[in-house]
Amino acid sequence: MNDIDLSNFETEMNRGFQQILVLAILETRLYGYLMVKHLESAGYPVEENTLYPLLRRLEKNGLVKSEWELAPDRPKKFYLITERGKIVREKLLGIWADQNKALKAVLEGSAHV
Image 1 (tube, rainbow, N blue to C red):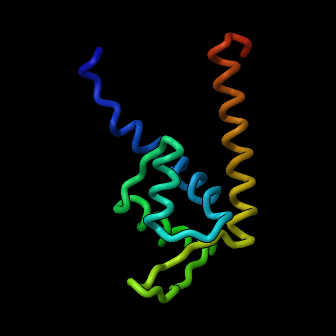
Image 2: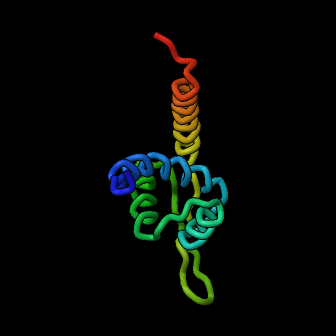
Image 3: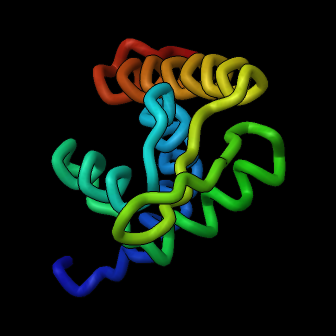
């Protein structure tokens, strides 16, 4: 059983979860490296080459906004959730809660036909 490759399943599961996670973490204005560190400390490491394309997609869809800030060492691009992003986040969290509830019912055997 240890030779079963779950990487494709994990990739699919992570895709939606990472969107919710990023929308949740961006209640506070952050730049990419800080997001990576926050997510890592929360027990969910995300590589920068995964995070930045996700941020671009979220920004393209109007769910986050970005702004450059000039710093003494180098410019940093900060991200923050938009009002539209907050609405989407709440809806996604509702979907996620419903999915967890259904999974729990199935696993506990309380779901019946």
